[in-house]
Length: 249
Image 1: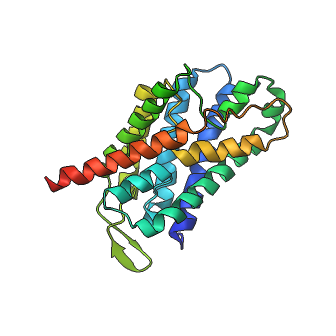
Image 2 (image 1 turned 90 degrees about the vertical axis):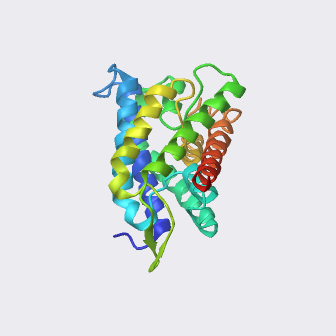
């Protein structure tokens, strides 16, 4: 078992982004084996399975949040220690950056062959199908709300962190598959508007990596970047608060 919950969050989010960014690269970049396939089904399936694998590997150490919105939602629900929130969020952001960079290295020849910058950017971060910030924000809120609200009813009651049993809910290993299915469903049903970031680290970390790439015409779209950060934070927090209210009735 991984020794530190913060290291587990870093490793888990790295794995999540390696697979998640990898599938988008596989269907969007030039001359890959999967280029020209049905991308949305492949993308949503891969993200769901990526969650399953990353959660299964790291859940026993950290609860496998892998997402600042999940961490905040758990804290607002009273199921996670607020003192650990900053460390988890930093680990998740760094893991997302590393995972997307590893996917970039894996597909580096195909990145070089791809001239459409929008296709390149899409392998790192999300963007709206129709640019309407109010509606885009709501899409991220509702998608993340369903992720955290659903996870709170799926996950097990406790994990052991640093020698003591605590009510630190996460996406526990026994519940990894249903949580992966939940992410898959969110992508299929709600992801068509913004690409369903539903995770601030998943979008911001890779967007930073994209900004640092040696590409002449890169456009990171920073004017939109706040939506996949603040939308999931709001959605996850509201889900945690509502869960806390409902279980006290």
